Length: 499
Image 1 (cartoon, rainbow, N blue to C red):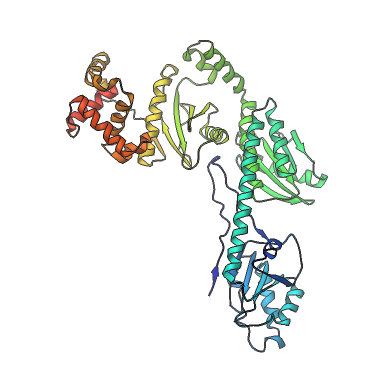
Image 2 (cartoon, rainbow, N blue to C red; image 1 turned 135 degrees about the vertical axis):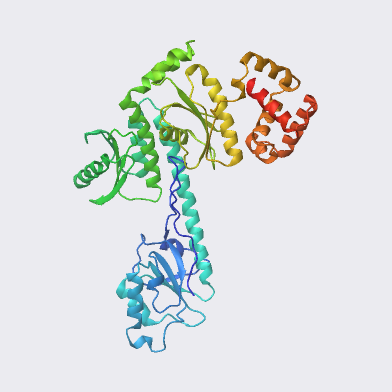
């Protein structure tokens, strides 16, 4: 019976930055042999400290080739071995098929069929350089498979920690006065290699770390030219004992990040991808020259200028506000910046777990994998505060309805049929009993917008559903209104939109 006992690599694609998860590292065979509880013993094949296994697999098939993916520790009790196997070519054929399928090692159990490992099997494993492990009677195959998975889990945790620390150090480097060289230095350190930024014409703008041999240096430059014409593409190669990778930066200006390292651990691609995201943001600012304009706009706002007067410095007349929350863990500055880059804006604010982005109206925000977005209507700078409120409410509705993106409605409503002053006066009078308690007015507005759903309102407001019930009951009492009456609901909704 065939059965894979350990999990394969899981490398799902991620959001612009979300945060990326490295694949599961393989397990050194030496680590498995070092487990005293297993008492495994290598009796044939090379003793290579660099040999790794990716999972464990049990098979009693005479030809396991069709069932192997490569990299397995194949476990067998020898049930498939015929009595006269030692006098023919059976074991040579058996071992050669395992090697042809890419099997990493063979584990032979001494119970319940065989008391010793057949000598012909030992000879065949030596001949084909396949590591052969003797599995003692007290050690079960499921115990070996569990040990492999435990070692993989430990290695994965260590790799996740390494990647997280690298992300934090790269983000800190990007905030230094010399961000591009700092990011390259940190990246080179984290991958124990060399990092270089190529300009649109292929010249080396900046680099850090130990430069590779001339052959690898030339090969990396050639690899960079391959991805220059394809923004957001990646290419990898090996040369002169170095692992090479080139990342086209997402600015569309021809900048490329090159990385050369003596080895390539599972998390190295994730770390380099973070560096590429940061350099995309930095080179985008360098190329467009908007960094100084944004700084000037901020200074003028802080010194008392009106938004309408500083908006031209930002390059657009009308804007949308986007509020976003990640679907899993909390957002960090790198993820927030990457989301802004994906939406086409570097005007990003991260506070209280919500990412707020000011996006030019000519760049239509689209749903982003791993994020929930609320988008305001397109407005002029004087209406930015109102757009911020619209985006917040759209995000609350998106989270309540589990939609990836919700836009603020822009259709003409009843409020346009009644003079604004009259509508506002009516709203103040009608809502006066609850106006002094913002929690009540916001709960009523959200509850009405979600058609009276307790659960969705609770999700949108991040409170317990009983809290929603209590607040709505309080609103009904203070307003002396029957909130089950659709006419009452319509009038209250009109008033809330007219305030």
